[in-house]
Length: 76
Image (cartoon, rainbow, N blue to C red; front, top):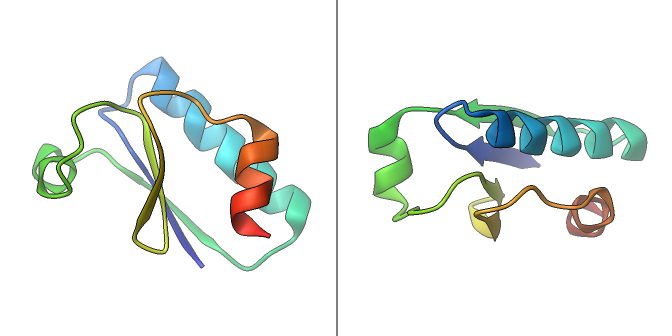
């Protein structure tokens, strides 16, 4: 499973990354979690609001920090 958190590095984006990493660790799954900060990559996906969480190339959440239960549901 490939999970990417897109955002410029603001505190909200860092919180989203922390929530995703905690959920992956709690679930004990094999997933690659990556933080993407490059503007060109963010724009290529058409993302206009960050943070954005993408799991296996599917946008799951944009413009807010996801709740831990949401991330757990997405990765289960």
